[in-house]
Image (cartoon, one colour):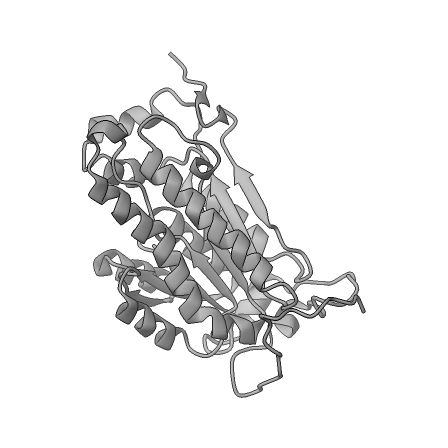
Length: 299
């Protein structure tokens, strides 16, 4: 077995048959700290048929009412996860929960009390946490921007991810689980009018990388997916305060921007790697977007 230096932040893992599921047995995976060995994953129908909701691996998805969060919840449910859906908009959340037989939890992740309730609902074992809640607000130059929007973006992108991760970490530790952060290519470099959002996403990425270091020595995976141009119904519309024309202009002429389902597919791939494999950082863009500032548009 590979040897690992002691981690001052690590918690000793002990078997507790009273909580959760045996993730390794469900997927046929071996010790994440042992030598990599060929494994045979059970197929989706086998997993669904073999495990009732209370015994299936547990996934918690924040920002699950629409866009990337909703698509990820669907993808994980199709794979056999019992999905706990967290978001502020209860109507959309309830509809999705009924569709995938998940558990809806009304949760504003900027509120510590609501996050504590989410942790209670999730229970003692969580196999996958997808920190997807966040978003952009405004794109005005610093000279005339509303600085309250900067504070809101920091709360929605950084503090929500930190707060939810902190609350669920004991349950993730019991499952030797995976924590996914949906950051953004906006963390790579600034652009005009993007100081608030780029800064928030860069801070979130710093959180991811610090956590990865802090948990080294424990069989917990910490992964970051950074999407580029993704065309969803609400991201740009929210950013521009309901201005549909301005939101549409973001995607105008771009052949085949990414979809929420593209990102959900990538997240699902990341969390279903053998447990000794950690996808530290995955940047994903449409072919038409060569860089944040370089986007091909058809005229």
